Length: 150
Image 1 (cartoon, rainbow, N blue to C red):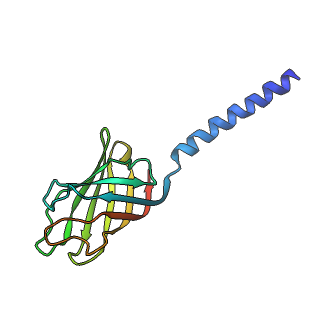
Image 2 (cartoon, rainbow, N blue to C red):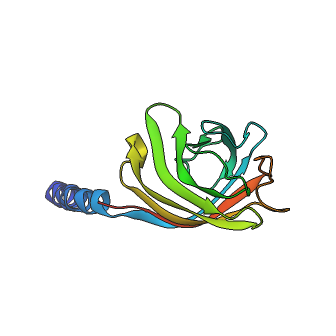
């Protein structure tokens, strides 16, 4: 009876040893749903919006979406963005949206910390006219596929 228990325990341990590397190398992926509020966004480089909800823990509430360029004279956006999370965690992306559009895109490619291997192609939706001529942005949401690839 004791031999059967040891043999069973040995099989369980062997199974875990074999499974852990496979699980660790498997890419994490899914569909990201994120909302942000933009009361601190002025349209100038360095101004930001703040994440208010996300279904991906990496983008915790309070993460800042910092625009690295200024909104165009027509209200358009075509510049890099950085999502700065707590600690040394940042996701690097590029946003585009026309001044009169409500829909644009954000493409992420890597980052630091937990975003080192982050990839995403998201649709950016800013209702009620998108980005106004004064550069202010209404509350926005992002939706689309993401992955953490090797």
